[in-house]
Length: 85
Image (cartoon, rainbow, N blue to C red; front, side):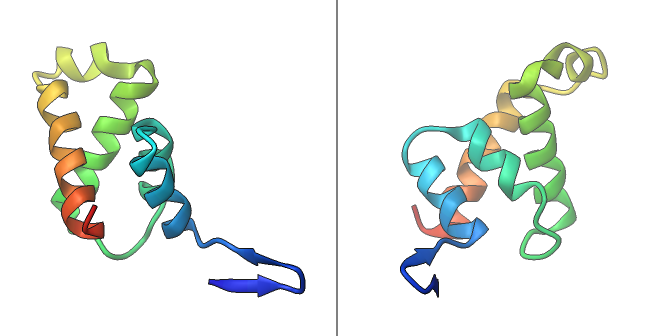
């Protein structure tokens, strides 16, 4: 963690971990989906669909035949494993 003279500056990863631990999956996924590295293509796809589902676009993915509940559960698992939470 870097410091800015008086207070530490949290990284995006730290903020995402903190949000996830606090139960704010939508907030955590919103940050994590912007990460260019650290996740496979399939993991990024799951994270993006889970986030889109949580912000109100669930019906769109369901019309495409995507199991959004499974994507959300899978995204939780990915984050838990990746960040040891």
